[in-house]
Image 1: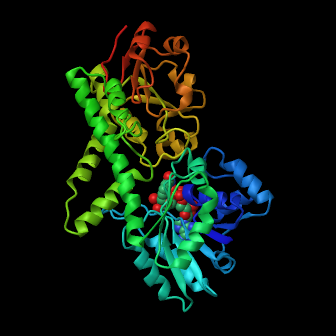
Image 2: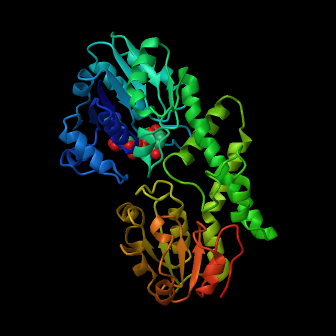
Image 3: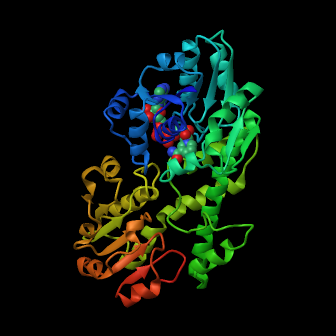
Length: 437
Ligand SMILES: NC(=O)c1ccc[n+]([C@@H]2O[C@H](COP(=O)([O-])OP(=O)(O)OC[C@H]3O[C@@H](n4cnc5c(N)ncnc54)[C@H](O)[C@@H]3O)[C@@H](O)[C@H]2O)c1
């Protein structure tokens, strides 16, 4: 099938590449010429495990190409995916200007029937706005499909090639049939393709993200209570997770959720509820708890070192909002590093992939270190913010010797408190008792 995917960010580039891998001819379109030029040179503008190799192979085999020319791409495609960003407006609603601009561009370029697929995360009712925008600019027939994306950054390729489920909202048999054809190669192991109306498909994406965010905030509250009553959240997490009704995923306490999706999607669904005269108190609390949790690690630093951090130096390991990505959008690390800087501390940061992004955020206010141990030199303490695998089994002796004081604030509970005590550290985790040598 001939397709175009508009928007070559985390979602569009992964989706386009995976559809090419599935045997389709795919044109990936973006309006940022520098991005398309880079992709044509074989440079991948984002870090996503496995993506570069998959792009290279599909480009070499002639199924994947890149363009800034939307009209040309639409003329060559039967199905047009919209995968542009839907950032947050000031009032919390989703900004649909890019989605609707692309819908208009597609309509203006159409020379026959098309299927237009909204893959961006869009509020309920957006399918109707897309339809109206397109109808005003074309006489040709078209279907609007709502096909939300559930991939996780850091495992996006695997998620796309082996999804738990595919959700398709549409109104015609032809649209469902075409979408089934596209996705069938990825659901051979029995994952369902769920067909529904557009509004339900749009809502499914928000409901899923909001529920995941709720689990995280809920567990962070449990962790904070564990600290007060002398329970260990790691035991609690396991005790809860083995319940088959609950499962283990998204029960890890930490420094709060971040990223380009949960914060804005929770905001957007609250905004939709308010528009409909509903308060949605559960999600308001989820947000409130998350904002507080992002400040939790710095509060622990203050408990140890006092409010005034002038003359103190801190190392921070992990800046991306989660491991295996370079994405720092809404990352808790931003709140944490700023919290330290605002109190006069010096900060030395390390992340395996996000240093280039971090430089855009922090400029010359922190020092950057490619090697994690280098960030520790002369530091009064280490803060662990992202649970990259390479931080799980470090050389503790080397760490203790590099640090000025052997203190670790672990926002991800990577280590066993008893082991840390044996290695001579003051170790301050989340939802578990701190230990001292
Ligand atoms: N990142 C994720 O993990 C994830 C997962 C599921 C769903 N989503 C949703 O998918 C959508 C895209 O997210 P993303 O993370 O890929 O965003 P992104 O910001 O990484 O990428 C968006 C891309 O669209 C391009 N773009 C914007 N306006 C354009 C236009 N008018 N014409 C052509 N290109 C244009 C931008 O240049 C950019 O390359 C959002 O709605 C997001 O909520 C994201």
